[in-house]
Image (cartoon, rainbow, N blue to C red; front, side):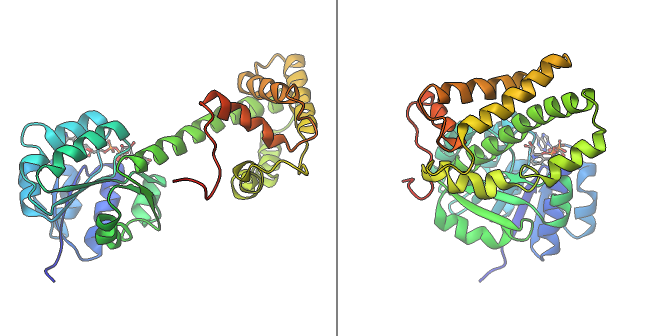
Length: 305
Ligand code: NAD
């Protein structure tokens, strides 16, 4: 079998590390960026330079892009001298950017008309992860195309997941990041209140890291054992006890004049759940309220289509 030639566009903080790891795995590479200086290391390793995405697409089998967002993904793929003008039947384009699921679905249809395949494969793990090959990669699109290029993904990611049809990788990534930023908001509320109420920041942070939250129990144990199975009886931690804890924290917030917006929202959810008569069920039963608001969407492990 002929050696696969790999193209990479977008050699920034993430793309720089990822493309270097692909090159170090021995693939022949062609690279492009609007900032040519970003390619210096790769060119020194023997990569070729392409002046445009079109030129790059004409000379490789597999194309990676790691671009800021939807605007750049659209212009690099279907703008002037874009990838679509250079791909041929059998070409594979994998977009590693965090971008719009709807856009990549539309672009995938356009590329299919040229006989080319598209995968969306956003990554998580930060710049250090990109440099060290320790990234989670969430891949949507054809499963057989995914299997064809999986070994290239494994050259720069240690946790590679196939997520389903095109766009699903981006959906996973957007949900993942939004969870992170939501958590960050309530963490800052609780840190400011804790410190204002008299605890040393280091001591407070250590307690949060050592407790159930810091051990990752919510994602690793509690949700899989309760909510994600629809199992709330017998309770691991009763709803009425959870509500008592958040209520006490809000009382402390009032005492110390610290606004607790996310915590107030959590308290209201727990209260609404109590009003359903669920106070003695497991506290995670309150998450069923969001399922109702979302249009009766059930989130259960092992039951998706
Ligand atoms: P970056 O700005 O460092 O890199 C983007 C690169 O794309 C730059 O080198 C830029 O010159 C190039 N570029 C921009 N427009 C271009 C165009 N039209 N043609 C060719 N090249 C072009 O951004 P980054 O931090 O590497 O992020 C890249 C993607 O990865 C983003 O979608 C981001 O959301 C995602 N991401 C970033 C991180 C992180 O920690 N930085 C983590 C995970 C995912």
